[in-house]
Length: 387
Image (cartoon, rainbow, N blue to C red; front, side, top):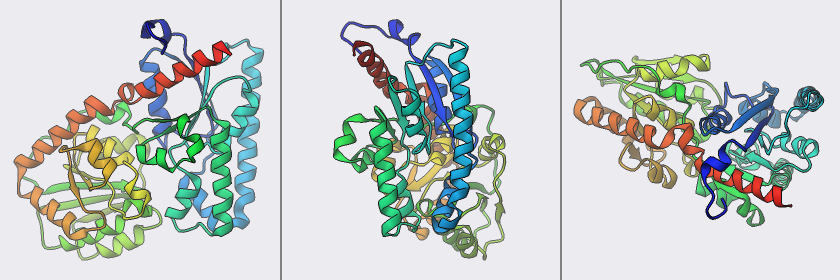
C-alpha cells in the first residue's frame, strides 16, 4: 500500500474474481480466502465449475496413466463452461475484475485464466506442488516427476502472485519465483466455530481423526497408537474418511474395540461431528512434506474447540505454540501416552481446549488469515493501474 494511503480508500475498489475448477465443499481453502475478502468489504464474484476429481483421484490417475484421457475430457468440459461464462459476463457488461484468483488445484486453470485475462493480475492458490504431492504419495517416477515439475513451473510462471501456506513452502518454490509468494495460513471456515460444544462429562475421552489417509497424515501411526490403548477404556476414537493408508491404520488398531470407522460424511456435517469430540488429531507422518505443512484439521479442530494433538514440526510449533500437544512424528507410543494422559487429566484437557479455541478466534478466522494476501492484492492492483 502506498505511504499515507488508508484501507478505507482501497477496500471497496478491489474486485476479485474467483476462477477455476476448485471445489470448496471438498477443499475449503478457496472458500476461506473468498470469505475473508468479502469480510474485508471487497467485491467477490465467482466463475467456478468444479472438476469433480479430488487430489486422491488425480494421484490415482498418475498410477494408471491410461486413464488420463478421463482427466483431459473432464477438464475440457469444465473449461468450455468457464469460457462461456466469461464471455456471457462480458456481454452483460459486468465490471472487469481487478484481480483473478485461481483456486486450489489450479495448475491447469491458471493457464486458462492467463489466456482469458491477459492484462489482469492473476493470483494462484498454490497450496500444493504437483511434483511434491506425487513424491509424497509414492507415484513420482522419473518421467512423471519431470512432467509434474514442468506443470508446477508453468503454473507459477503464469501467476503474478503465488499463495502458499507456510514459509517452508516458499522455500520449495524455484528461487526465481519466491518474490511472487505470500504466506497465508489455511485457517478455518466460519462454520467450524459456530454452534455449542457438548458439556464436559466424566465419559471416556472422545478422539476424532478425519482425512484422506494420505502418507503425510500418518494414519497408520494413529492406528498403532489406538491399538496400544486397547486396554484403556478411558479413550474412544472415531476415524472418519478413507484413502491410501486406511487399511493399514485399521489393521493396526484392530485390537481396540472402542474405535469406530466411518466413511466420509457430507462436508456440512463434519464440523458438528468434530465439535462432539474432546480431542482432534492432526498429522503424524514423517515425510518431508509432512514436516512442511499445517493441515486443515488442525485449524478446523481448534476452531471447533477441541484439544489438538499433532506432530512436533517447525511450522506447527510456530503456529500452535503451547495451544496443542505436540509429539515426535511417526511415534505411536508417544501419541498413545498423550491420549492416556489427557483421559486422566480433565483440567488439562479443558485448558488445551480453551487455548485452541482462543487461538483459532484470534488467528484462524478467514478475515484474519487473509490480511497479508489482501495487502499483496492491493499492491498488484496499484501496479497494474500504473502500467
